[in-house]
Image 1: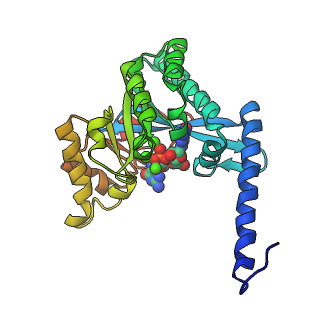
Image 2: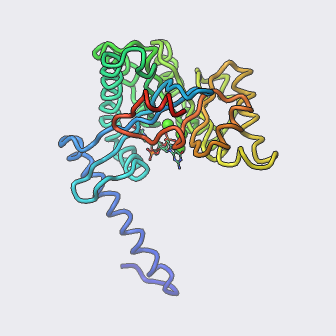
Length: 277
Ligand code: C2E
Ligand code: CA
Ligand code: CA
Ligand code: CA
C-alpha cells in the first residue's frame, strides 16, 4: 500500500476499502437477487384527512437477501443506480406495483386504493425508453393511467432536460407526477413552473416539527400555501403522531402518510385502516 503520513490514512483507507468491497459485493448480488426473485414490495397508505380514508399507496422495495436478511433500499438503491441495474429492477417494481393495484381493484372494488405511487430514480428517468416502458406496463396490466403516480426527486429533474422531457411524456399518458422529498434537494420553486408536477410530497424533516412552536412550522405552512396557489396536491410525509396530524390538518393539509396511519406492509388492511383513522 501507499506510504502513510502520521498514521491518519492507515485508519482511514481500510474503511474506504471495506465500503468499496461491500458496494461491489452488493452490486454483484443484485443481479442474482433479480434472477432469483429476492425482491418484493411493501405498500404504505397515503390517507385523506379527516377520516383517514386510504386514497393511495406508495410502493417501497425490499430485498430479502439470503445471507444478510432484509436489506433496506437506502443501502441498495444507490448501488443499483451506480451499476445501472436500477433500470431492470425499476421496471420490475413498476410492473409489480401496477399488477398489485389491479388485483386489489378486482378483489376489493371501491375499497381498493385509487392509485399506486412508484418511486423512480434519476437514472431510470433519464433512460430513453422510460415513457415507452410506462405505456407498455399500463397496457399489459390494463391499469388506467389515472391510477398511477410516478414519484421523482427534485434532484432527478433539476438541470436535466432529458428527465423533464420524460416526465412530460409520462404525464401525457395521464399518469400523475409527484415531486418527492420536496424541500430537501436543490429546491427551487421555479421547478414547479417548468416541471409537469401534480403532487408535492413535503419531506418528513419539515413534518417533524409541525406540532412545535410557531416558527418551526413555517416551511410546512409555506409549502401548503404554494401547493394550493399552484393547484397542486400536497402530501405530508413521515407523520408519526396525532399532534402532527392535527397541526397539518389545521394548516390545510388533506393528504398525509406516515407510521401513524400505517407502516409499509405487503398487504395493508385498507378497511381496518379507514376505521382507525
Ligand atoms: P422515500 O421515497 O422518501 O420513502 C419514504 C421512506 O420513509 C420509506 O423508507 C418509508 O418506510 C419511510 N417512512 C414512512 N413513514 C414514516 C414515518 O412515519 N417515520 C419514519 N421514520 N419513516 C417513515 P424506505 O422504504 O426505507 O425507503 C427509503 C428510500 O428508498 C425511499 O425514500 C426512496 O428514496 C428509496 N426507495 C424505496 N423504494 C424504492 C423503489 O421502489 N424505487 C426507488 N427508485 N427507490 C426506492
Ligand atoms: Ca417516495
Ligand atoms: Ca419521500
Ligand atoms: Ca426520503
